[in-house]
Length: 123
Image 1 (cartoon, helix red, strand yellow):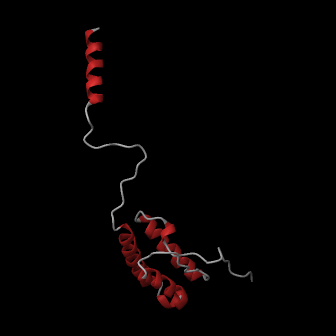
Image 2 (image 1 turned 180 degrees about the vertical axis):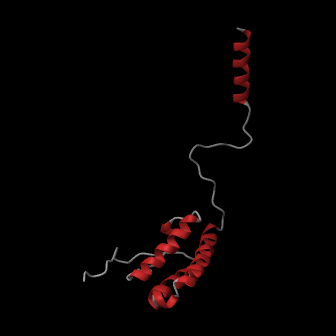
Image 3 (image 1 turned 135 degrees about the vertical axis):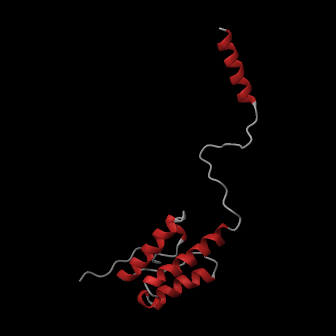
């Protein structure tokens, strides 16, 4: 009986001790203050790597310029680099997967069409 009482007392004392690090369920660690800049730099670097295998000429000037304008603006606001060709879609998917592998969401990227999803006309 004394052991059970002692165990209960120790459990109560331990429960009352302050935790050195507050633990909150389902709370993500805070993002660094420059998180947008970090993501933008990561996007810039990944984009440069992908452009080595899928050259800028292959994705087209308008598509590439939409990305470049987004980066020049600090990756802020809504941009529309609308993949209309198979090559643009392959490129956008490759960049997106690499960004997500780095822990970022695809919603950060400028890939999308202003009026919504576009598909190529049936042949």
